[in-house]
Length: 84
Image (cartoon, rainbow, N blue to C red; front, side, top):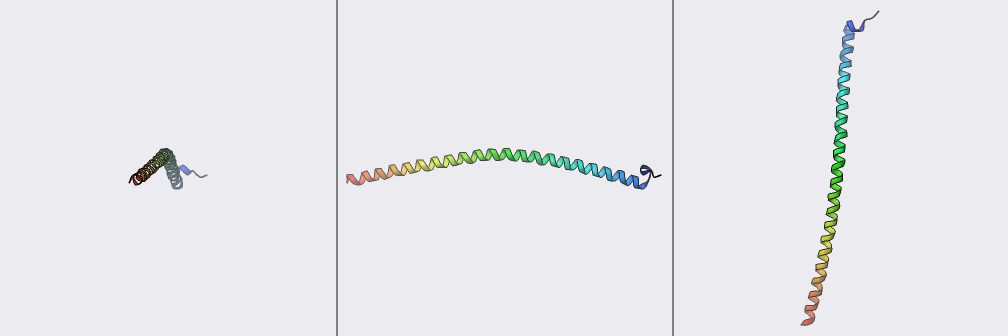
C-alpha cells in the first residue's frame, strides 16, 4: 500500500501539479492577451484602411485639379500667342 500524499514522491507530485496549474493559468492569460491584441490590431487596420482610402481620393482630386489648371494655363498661353 502506497500513500502518495505522505511520501517525498507525493510532495514532488503536488509540486509538479502546482507548477502545471500555474503554467496553464499563465498560458491562458497570455492567450487572452494575444486575442485582445489581435482585436485591437484589426480595429487599427480598419482605421488605417479608411485613412488610406481617403488619401487615395485626396491624391486623385489634387492630380485632377492640377491637370485642369495645366489645361487652363495652356489655353491661356495659346490665346496670348494668337493676339500678338
